[in-house]
Amino acid sequence: MDEISALAKRRGFIFQSSEIYGGIGGFFDYGPLGAILKRNVKNAWWREMVELRDDVVAFDSAIIMHPSTWIASGHVAAFHDKMVDCKNCKHRFRADHLPSLEKCPDCGMRETLTEPRDFNLMMQTSIGPMEDSASRTYLRPETAQGIFVNFKNIYQSARKKPPFGIAQIGKSFRNEITPGNFTFRTREFEQAELEYFVPNDGKDLACYEEWVAARKKWYSDYGVREERLRFYELQPEERPHYAKAGTDVEYLFPWGWGELESIAHRGTYDLDAHMALSGKDLTYFDEATKTKYTPILIESSAGMDRTTLTMLVDAYQVEAITDAESGKESSRTVLRFHPKIAPIQAGVFPLARNKPELVERARAIERGLRPHARTLYDEGNVGQLYRRQDEIGTPFCIMIDYQTLDDGSVTVRHRDSMLQDRVDAAQLREFLGERI
Ligand code: GAP
Image 1 (cartoon, rainbow, N blue to C red):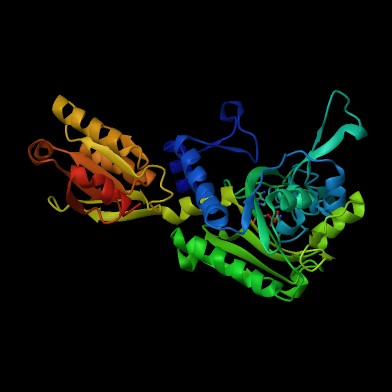
Image 2 (cartoon, rainbow, N blue to C red):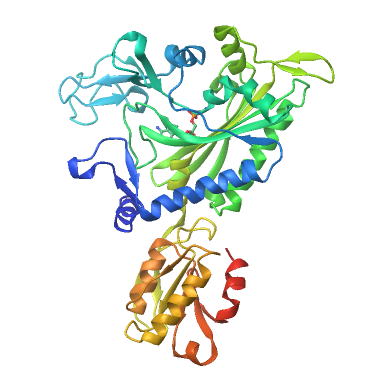
């Protein structure tokens, strides 16, 4: 993980937030390449979950909601972690992360830990100039509640009838007691949530299974290694009382298995809770049968920062290579991103930076490809150019050399095999189109 976070900083994927002031725990910034990578991950989710379906509509709600939302949702009463403090070193821990409550894991002292106390994970804020209890509310700890309270607005305006879903990607905030493992557990993060509403006609569990299968396919389509991914089915005692089924999607990180997503059958719990507190009707009225019912909810809730981190960890490889000509052994660091999510899909370079005719041709080829792929022009030492592109996960490198000036062909070097093809420059758009 240290190697990956060092690479992430060196190449501009992820930086500690406010680094010049010493950083701030649980917050991260995405650099020029990281911002593209994360956007690609979000786009890949959005494409599959919204654009390619006719039964899911888009949504984008405010981060700050009426404080009653969080009473109805149960977050005010129950969104707690147990924490303990060390009276000696003053460090704070999540009780469920400690092997025992006997001895502080940081300073090693015995019997210095306090009794576990409840700590609410919602981040408080206040609205307007008066900081009193009336102005207090929270930054949302999940995006889902914005969907639930708008259920009626959405189905009426979009003219949708269950089964149908509402999808949203947005920031959420949790005052985690112990953020850590790089961007895995942070205090500000992005969620991609799909809330799928189904009629109460006995097909709800089958629908839940379909979503589990759809999400499996998504991770597989983007190349996440099968052996490092597992779908853990929650046992009845691990699920909330109202949930008929639940699956955690987990990835094997260098420190162990970590949850990327939770898929849950939530019954009618959420809509019921908002109806009870608001007194407003959030049922669905079926014009055809003239009946009113509360739809059952199937939820898929994925963390976009965790998924981005997964793509980075899963792609990372250090491999030994032998130079074909000299036989010299060396190692190369490579990020084997799926071409669809790689920040740069094709790098274009002139063989020599001091030959204007090569530079001009390379720039023209890169400009021509730019509307069709995420491209980058660079120049310099060939070995270093390839090394840099390997480290940022660029699947194709296009070299413009003297032969290009003669016959219009270029060299395309493949990131994974390091093999090279000779391709007609006029065919490059098609060549890349078939592969990205
Ligand atoms: N609406 C359901 C919900 O929020 P969750 O299991 O609490 O469910 C869903 O969160 C996903 O959000 C998690 O699987 C994880 O990917 C992401 N997530 C939750 N807390 C996080 C944190 N502190 N840092 C980064 N991602 C987090």
